[in-house]
Length: 330
Image 1 (tube, rainbow, N blue to C red):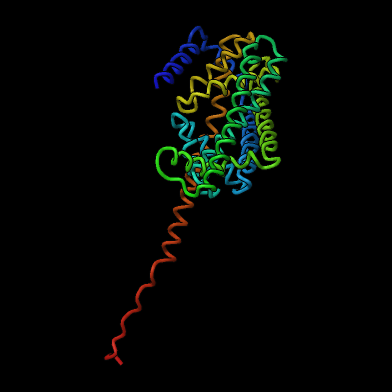
Image 2: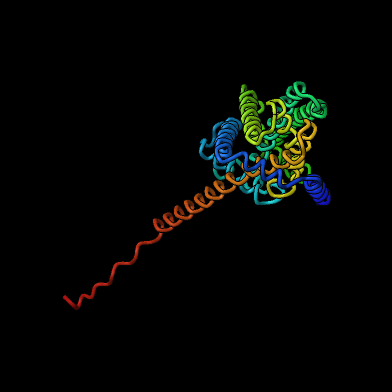
C-alpha cells in the first residue's frame, strides 16, 4: 500500500510540475471530435482480437459474444475500482460463461497476460532499435521477455507435474502441500492451452495484432494533436505504459499511466505540456467509452438474469388449487 501511494504521489508531482495548462487546452481542442471516434472504434477492434485470443486459450468453450462481454465488463470495473478489481470479477464471469473453475480461470488469465507481455516486450525491443533516445527499452524489453517466458515455462511445468502427481496418488489431502497440489491440479485445465499444438502460436499472433492496433491508436491520437510520433515510438510508449501498470494502484491506473507516457515522450524530445495533454487525452478516450458501455452491458446482463430467474420461479410455482364446489347447490 505504501509503495502504491508513493508511485501515485510521484506520478502526480511529475505531471504537475512546470506544466502550462493553457497549452494543454489548446492541444486537446486541436484533436477535434472525429479522431476520438476513430480511436474508440479501433479500441473495439483491439478488444475483439483479445476476445478471440481468450476463446483460443479456453478451447472455444465460450462464444465470441460472451468473451467480448467478459473483457468489456471487467475493463469497466477496473476503471472504477482500485487494484484492478475487474480481474477478480472476471474469474466469476468465466466460471459462469465458460464452465471452468475459478482456479482454471485464474490460470488462463495468468497465461493470457504473460503471453501478452512477452509479445509486447519482443515488439518493443525491435521498435527501440529503430528509435533514438530510447535505450532504456533496449535494455528493459529483453529482461521482461525473458522473465515472462520463464514464468510461462514454470507455470506449465508446475501445473503439469501437479496433474501427474494427482492422477498417480488420487485425491490429495492434508497439509499445505496437499492444498497447494489441489490448487495446481484445478489450475492445470487453464494451463492446458500451453501444451495444445498451435494454440500458443495462435494466441501470440492475436496478441501481436492487438498490440499493433493499440500502437496505431496512439499514433492516430498523437498525430491529431500535432505530435510527431513515429510508429516505433508509439510501440515504445505502449511498452512504457504497461510497465507502469504492472503495479496495480488507482482506478484505471490514473497517475502512473500518464506519468509513464510523459516520461517516454520526454526522452523523445517532446515538450512536457503537449506530452501531458496527449497522456490525459488518450487515457480519457480509452477509459470513458469502455466504462460507459461496460456498465450498460453489466446492468443489461443483470436484468436479463433477473428476468430469467422470475420466469423459472413462475414455471416452477405450484398451480393454484381449484375452487371448492358446493354439492348442495345442485
